[in-house]
Image: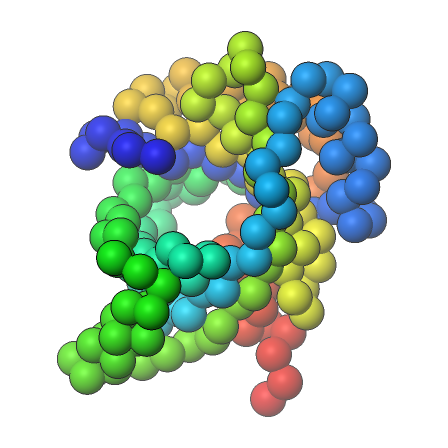
Length: 194
């Protein structure tokens, strides 16, 4: 997906009490169309002088089939994280020519002093609705962490995007599920063996 430079990723993630099959059935009944399930493997990094866990910054190398990219998300602030669990951040993505270049990206980041934090593997199915362009609902099974639903809107208008997230969650009946403010990286690190 091509994004405008000023576009913001507005999302809310919620913990699922099960493996997401019931939600997948409901999405289908409501006309949401799934993409093919895919596996994403993300390697997260931090700087030696700044703890990206503390600043809630994101620097990752993502692998997905024959696709790879490097992503950076800036530090979290009171503006980027609302009290109701909605996260709004600009995201910079650099698409690599092939998945094989992900290993070179990892090597480059380590050569310039970035330190690897954790690898996160998730199986994701993303749903789109023909009458709701720009809105995606993803069901994620994160290895060693659990099942989640993520509602996301890419927009230049954060207020309108937040409203679309809330409307979609209401339509799906998931507003009673607990919101999750932490990225999968942090959740995986808290569950990783010492």
